[in-house]
Image 1 (cartoon, one colour):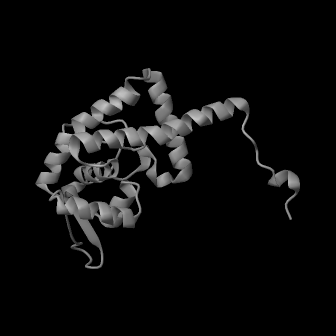
Image 2 (image 1 turned 30 degrees about the vertical axis):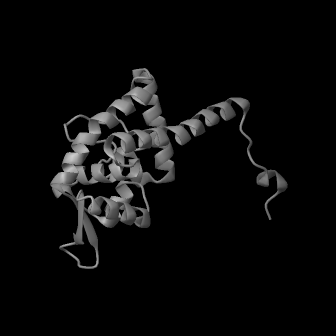
Image 3 (image 1 turned 180 degrees about the vertical axis):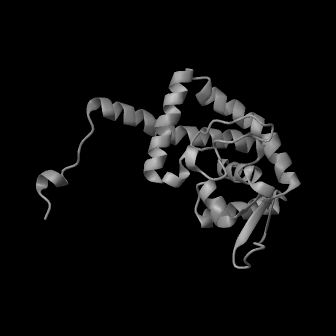
Length: 185
């Protein structure tokens, strides 16, 4: 049986608590703010935008649903609901994978590509306003490196440098690179 000493939490120091409080506040407010911008300007939520980006960066603009769930950082259930909404809007099409009828894949339509291309500039402006331009180059690099360490601790496959398809690390439809806000996008 573990001793009482090993069961006791390793409480944060005052400095660690202040830093963690800042990180927690950013994690709570940044996605909501980015989501609001996308909803207002593009009629998409942040998760749907991530789905479109992942498809837009994929070869043939097509991914298996399980790969798409991993790249967009969502469960298969959440992804299925989002792809259903995007499908009803004509932005994505679902079909059985050509190599195996049991797996489904999603493909970004031309309308979906156009929607992504139209949404990206406003999203990038908001990412710049809230994060990129608010930090010095060194602070941004340190934030990105620190975030990558945390993501790698949670799930090594999602770390920016190791992710297949590069969602959050790759180009936008106009060829510019976007800084990942969570994520990635």
